[in-house]
Length: 128
Image (cartoon, rainbow, N blue to C red):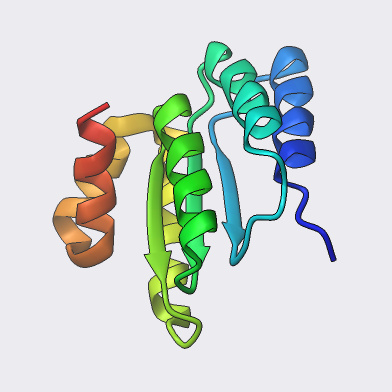
């Protein structure tokens, strides 16, 4: 089916206007939408202070560009993983959950213990 990143971003924005949303986690492998409309929705989410953790399965260059831009605008992070890397995705999702519930400090502490992809993700968040 047709990707719906814009719709996901709009929903997250609406939710964040009503209640605290610590982060958005998006896992995708392709991007088929108009970049301008997705960027506009990402900007709305960014104004509410919600970072987007954009996890990219595979190597589609158009998806990579779109996901990186959403992460940049929202002060989130972009990470790529391979389709066979279930453990890697699990670690990335755990890191996003830790950030959403405990913030940057909790993520840094977890990253020190875990290392690997989680440490890379934590360092990317620190640069924001």
